[in-house]
Length: 354
Image 1 (cartoon, rainbow, N blue to C red):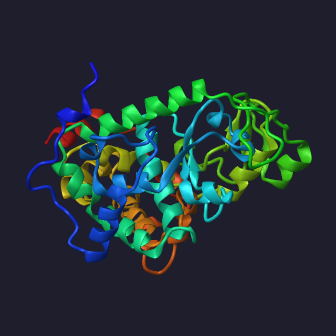
Image 2 (image 1 turned 90 degrees about the vertical axis):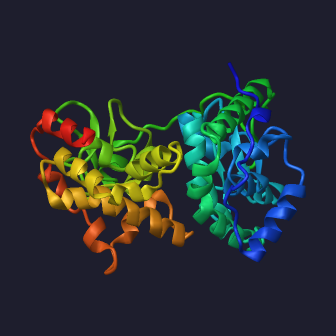
């Protein structure tokens, strides 16, 4: 059964920002009208102030031509920067739009890609950017104070509304990149041999097409699009080449999974990864390899911290951390060779339970 938003209330001692500019921005945002697809009366009590302010900067949207080349966006509706949308400048300062396939994906998109767009978009006022950064730092504490399941309930309802809107909308064929497409997949252009070679792809012994640069890295730790059972689309091949980390790990998937996990558990933050007991558990999963354990705990925390501090970074830029300050805990070059052939499940389970 669906829980009504009215059954959720913010606790009396809900933590709030003490920053005067943030307080002013947030008060003004609460008075602003928001599209009813995104936020309705009574739903503000379901979310943190960070999510509330994010939603006030967005508008619902349908995929454009540039989005429809990715099949995951076909048939979906999503959210976009309302200022870019109003000015016809979609794509300015980052993509500025996202089309989540599930409520958990929506949570991650709001916290990462949409936040990154908003704090670098020149159309967003500086006080709003300041407030977003301030409230993001408070997000975990507010999540821990919300009634259990409140924000997840809101994101589920929001995702349902976007899905219904996509089905009901009559979307006509586009005559240009700034007009929505109808809800059908665009034709794909298979990469020819020259494009495959130029972007480091070849046919593997298995018959699959794959990237030669990252072929030794476990698939889940590669940039998206490294393997294809059929001849891949040339746009996806070129996109993978742009994001490929070669023989280093692409930590973006692990960071997304981690942020989704900690956001869904009251009182838990990403600093859980620095807990000695959790590190010991991770160490047992990687055969006792200290360097691997370091990358998968302190490295993920550092990546999250630096992405929050540097709004121009995206998850695809996870290797930008390889500077003097962070190299020791994020450098994963050739670490794929350090993974154990097998682990003792009994020992790993015991360490997790203890």
